[in-house]
Image (cartoon, rainbow, N blue to C red; front, side, top):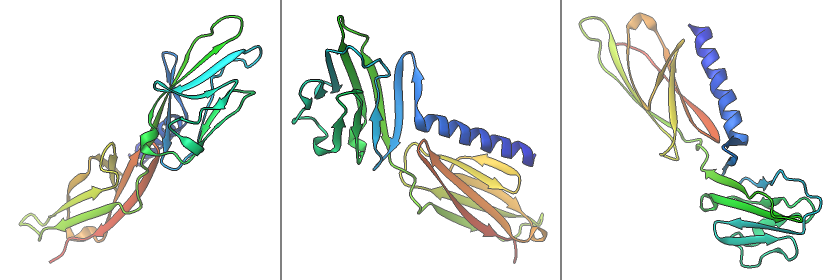
Length: 207
């Protein structure tokens, strides 16, 4: 059972790593980044022979091959354009930078438009909080433990509780322990697509 838990944890980490970098579906790229990161947007098209090239954010032009970065672009002094490779780099990302970018280019003809969706996420903060309550032993000898894990941001967070070799999903956990168990450690893993944090609480059943 412990091995199964480890396999699931490894699978989650591999999936998280894949999502963190780039996921592509139906020719559209989705890039996940966290607040404060930089991102480099690449067309993945050959740069040779390009006569015109334009990056847009939504309907707003960001950079052209001839004139470089547009002064009225939404990112102001946080954007750089490589006039050779036509990559676009945006620094100090904010949540408001999430959106769709498009790259259009011409050689002797128009090439396919490249669409990239950028999703900027707030990382899980270090102040993941575990609230806990333990009841008095019941006639059957067991105490009931109630735990709740809260992390910032409060949306799009996945919670996984680990108790020994057992795992449970969700921010809240109800669990039974008995006096002879001694100290029992409950660990909450709070994660989103760009980060994860652990918080633990050690409890015991006693009078």
